[in-house]
Image (cartoon, rainbow, N blue to C red):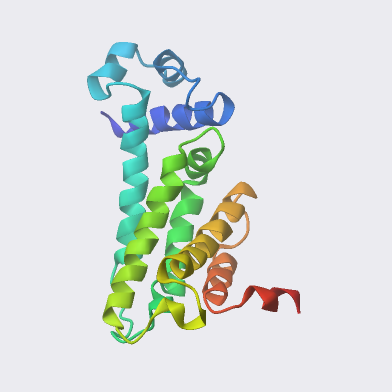
Amino acid sequence: MRPQTERKIKQVFTHLMQTKGLNDLTVSDIARGANINRGTFYLHFVDKFALLAYFEDQTIDRLTAILTAPCGEAENASPIDFISRDTVYQALVYVQGDREFVQALTSDTGDPKFVARFKGILAGLLDAQAAKSPEFTFNKVGFPADYASEILLSTVVSIILLWLHKGATEDPAMIADMIDRCKTLAPVELFR
């Protein structure tokens, strides 16, 4: 498929997810909006869910590449540093560049599995960093590891989702700083 056709299909698909929702949009809607015939669509995709998977996989693959790229950090870094501030910033810049699509994916009418997939990437990074630091355990404050991990991951994901739902207009550097600070900030400290 030609790049400009792919871009147009993604643009139309994104708009339709935002306005009609994933469940209510049709292949005919996509073809009509992208000014292609249905045969062209079916030449590349089985249905709208295959199209969703195609674009969503591109986004997940790119985020995975950004988040797992070596960044020269110390091998003995704490698991809490499972993702550096600079890496978060780069991921946020990428998301901001594809804001409309990611907003559509994370909306009530998008794909609820997308957030779980993204959180899975972060969980893998956290687990890998924890494996490098055997002396570090999550239950130092009385939380079982799975709950402690969920608290940390949910905080990161929630900040990103709020940023997206607010339009992703705030500077990614500011959001990256917030996420970095929240990795070591107790919630009670937010009220002082």
